[in-house]
Length: 145
Image (cartoon, rainbow, N blue to C red; front, side, top):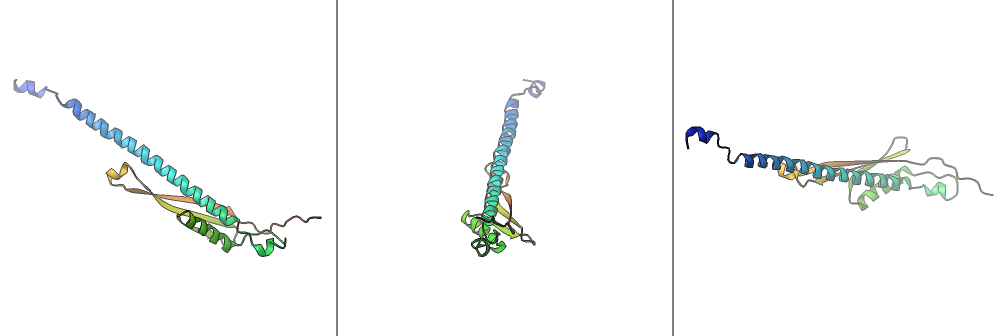
């Protein structure tokens, strides 16, 4: 073979092309898998935060509810009930009551451990969930006969 014929030889060119395409395809699959996994983790965090807020919203003040005066939620008991729900769900988060005592806000925090992105040095992604509940104030029970 002459020097000119060797330059036109393209043996092995398909192998390089396939290798690049396979790496790109694995990257796309990895983003889809880890992106979907993070979305599921965010949905779970939102669900837990919402359920914790709902649990807090059911902390009715028995001092007013039992005698039939009014159905109101005790803000401190609501916050404690939401924190207890988070603890039972083994989830980190905070429960706060607004300054006017009418809204309970729950925020959860967690991580999603990546499957494919770990090969690129991204071992986990942070996840945050949010939930709110309106706390009852001054709801009068109807008078019976």
